[in-house]
Image 1 (cartoon, each protein chain N blue to C red):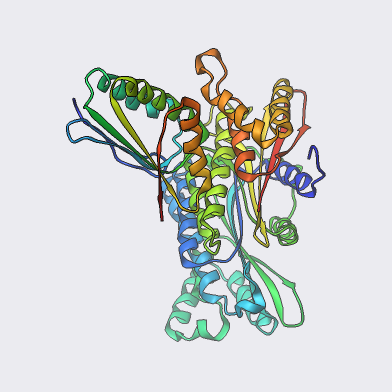
Image 2 (image 1 turned 45 degrees about the vertical axis):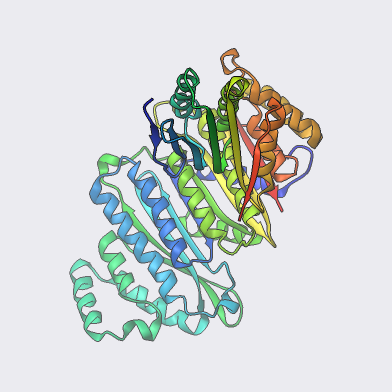
Length: 124
Length: 378
C-alpha cells in the first residue's frame, strides 16, 4: 500500500502512514482552514488499509495542539481504528506534555467515548 | 456583556465603529524585543502580501515600518524601570488615500526640544534640501548619539514624500511620550471614496486610543479582514508577546482560544462585502498581572442573533461536567445533517478557560448586529 506522507506547515500536522514500515503517526499542530478537507485523504487511507492491515497497528498521536474542527475529524479516525481493533491488534499511543492536562483529557475523552483503551504517554 | 458588566465591551464596539473606515488597523503596545519585532514585521508583511497594493507601494510601506521599529528599539534609551515593560507603541493603518505608520516611545523631557527642532527642520525642507541635509548628517556621523534621533527621520521623510507628524505628551517631570507618524500616499488609482464628514486629526485620535490602551492594559488591537493567514500571524505574534509567560499551559490555552475565536470570525461572520477574501472583524488582546483577556468583534445578520445567543447561553449554563457531554454530542454529530459543529468552539473555549464566555450583541442597522465575545484566562 502506498505511503501517505504529509509535511507539516504552521497550521497542519506531519502525517506518516506507512504500512510496510509499520509507522502510523500524526504530530505537531493541527488547525487547518478546512479540517474536513485536510483529513479526507487520511480517513480514506485508513479505510483502505483496514481492508488488509498489518497484524499489529501501532498508531502514535503526538499532537501538540488541535482545534475543535479537527477534533470532529479525529473522532472519525478513532471510529475507524476502533473498528479495525475488533479483528486486529491496534495500539493507540497518545502523547501529551507533562504539564498539558488539556491534551491528556482530550485523549481520555476519545478513549472513554469509544471504550477503546489508549496508552497515555507523558513526555517532558 | 451578558451575565456580567464589562467596561471593555463598549470600548471595543466604539473602536470598531471608529475604525470601520480603515481597511487595516494594527495597533500594538508592549515590549519590543528583537524577536517580537521580526514577528510584527512578518504579520505586517503577510497582511501586505495579501493586499492588492503594487509592489513599489509594498516596499515603501515595509521600508518605513522597519525604520520606525528600528527607531523604537535602537533609540529607546530610557531605562526599562522608568519606561515600563510596555514602553513601545507601534501602529499601521490604511485609510482611503494613505497608509499611516505610527510609533511611540518614552523620551527624556530634556531631549524634547532637540527632537522638536530636528523634526521641524526636516519638515521645513523640500526634496532637494532633504537630500543635502541627509548627506550632511551622514558625514557628521555623531548625530545619532547626540539626540537619540537619527538619519531614520530624514529617510522616512524622503521615502514617504510627506511631512512628518509628531507630538509629545508629558508623563511626569522627567519623561514624555513621543508619538511619531509617517504618511504614505497611495497612488490615485488605489483611492477609495472618502467620507468627507470625518476630518479628525489622525495622530490625536491614536493618542486617545493609546490612552485607553494604557488604562485597560491592552497589547494588541487588530482590525482586518480575517483569514487563516492573519490568524497564523497573530498566533506567532501573541507567542512572542507572551515570551515571559513561563507557563506552557497558559500559552497553549491562549493559543487555543485565539484559534477558536478567529476561525469563528472567518468561518461564520457575516460581512456586507461578499466579494473580498476574509471577514471584517476586530481582535483585542489584553493582559494584567497574568490575567489575559481576549476579545473579538464581528458582524452577524440580525436573523442569526437568537440562534447564536441560545448556543452561547447553553454553553454558559452548563456545568463543567455536562459541558463535556455537550462537547461529545456536538463532536459526534453528523455534519451532513446540517449540524456543522455549532457551539463546539464555544464549549471548548469554556472548557479550556474554565470561565463563562461574555458576549454581547449591538444592533447597528436593519440587517446587522455587532457581536462581541470576551474570554478571560488566568
